[in-house]
Image (cartoon, rainbow, N blue to C red):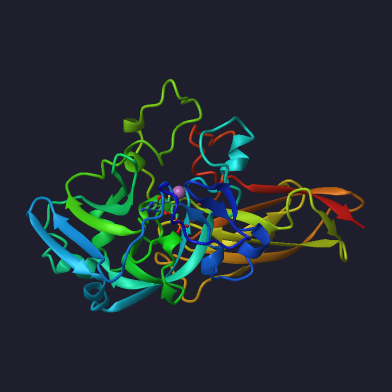
Length: 376
Ligand code: MTE
Ligand code: MO
């Protein structure tokens, strides 16, 4: 059984699939703190978790054009200056279960918790690449490919790539991380080395990193080429051509209400209810405002937003947690709460899922709507 050696997991992580293991934490726990505890961080594995011995671990880094290759042990990587970033990782399929309600899509039915925020430490990828002679202007390469040590039955590894500009940008904060929240990265999250690509979709943050290839080409992996792409609402499985859409990299602005939950009965105090959630945007764009409504989006009020230390455009890699006390319509026994966030480029979220529906159910960032009952 390739799944015979999986790590132990926290009981609060409710799996949507066990082999491979995929699970998200309960929403109320998700927004308890700005930093998501390791054991509650959602897990998205496509393959069995590989068993990696840190004492024999090797990372291969090669440049296809220069035909150069260098091998790094964990000790070698720890010799580079230790760089720490607080970054949110989100699956492109986060909130897919809401998009499905418009029309079915293919993919794991994630709720709103396929996202987490952690402090990651490791070597900067640009420092490691510089030691191979790869710097801005000194290479014709266009992409940095990553391969995991997790493999399918045909021995094909998980793989993805990012544009070289992101990797070489000293402000891009791409790191080869060996720590998550001050501890060695847990097995489920990529032990012993995982690439953290802040502001970029989860799928490119390759875990159990085994190989880096500097190349003129994108990764040819299934997950880069034939998955994790957006399409028009009119495209279906008979007409889809995966070559026609670019691979998702930076994610659009998103938010979610984590308290109260859909269908919950909520106590009204002084005509108001308490609402809490998260908001985040890709590409280092900062959350500048979160608007909350209790009447389905007719009237809005700004929430109080708590951001990560030092959050600054365009390096605001971590999410924000927001809270609001919002008046509910008088004498009504039901209300529809809505949330939408605005990022530092003044991008905001689409109003509904009809307009952004796509067959893979990715980029599901419409207003989050939660219907509640009011106890008066
Ligand atoms: N890396 C490897 N090697 N194998 C994987 O299956 N899944 C990717 C990414 N990196 C994956 C991977 C996807 S789709 C996501 S959303 C994130 O890891 C999930 O990271 P997490 O499990 O640490 O939350
Ligand atoms: Mo993902």
